[in-house]
Amino acid sequence: MHKLGRGPRVKLQQFMSITGASEKAALFALHGSDWNLDGAFDLFYNQPPSRPMTDHRHLEELYTRYKDAFSDMISVDGITLFCEDLKVDPGDIVMLVISWHMKAATMCEFSRQEFIGGLQSLGVDSIDKLKSLLPTLRAELKDDHKFKEIYNFAFTWAKEKGQKSLALDTALGMWRLLFAERPWPLVEHWCHFLQTKHNKAISKDTWSQLFEFRIIDPLLSNYDAEGAWPYLIDEFVEYLNEKKFIQSGVL
Image (tube, rainbow, N blue to C red):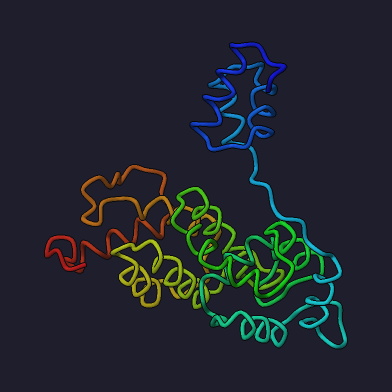
């Protein structure tokens, strides 16, 4: 620090005091922004968080513990054992968050690359380390941006291989799981409507648009009937009005 002039030295102390960054991290951000404090703050707060180094040998041992005996893949039995080791239920939403981090292509399956790469991205190489991270992974569902990413990921992850749509029963289960974390008062009415009036697989468009529809006032006071909603959502609104749920306030 003694080689810095008075101005840069003051900025360095200011930056470290506000951010709690180390001198090395502060110098990196300030140099990267040409000593502009606002630019340095942006660089510091927007850079990806550093992850601890992982031991690839430990990751391979973990993968071997869970993979199928006759294929290079972790499937249902291996995931069941994985959940037992983590002491979580296979239906716990944290498994969806873990699968999102692993960029898993299919529910109840992890390829070698997905499993090992996902744990590396999380900076863990043991079950104990992953268990200690579970509260942080659950908290990601409280972040609006991450929740939307996880919601959109869930459609592709949960649908059957080779299918463009999501089986209705699976979609209902996923909606109930996701909206238990971010409550939507109309979720049970939506599920009942689909079971009694639709009873077909769910398209990607309907899945995506419902995420936007759920922020509409539950009493539909700000619902735009002329909006570009999928026909299913328009029919759902008609269903709510026919059943007089909105007028009666029974939600």
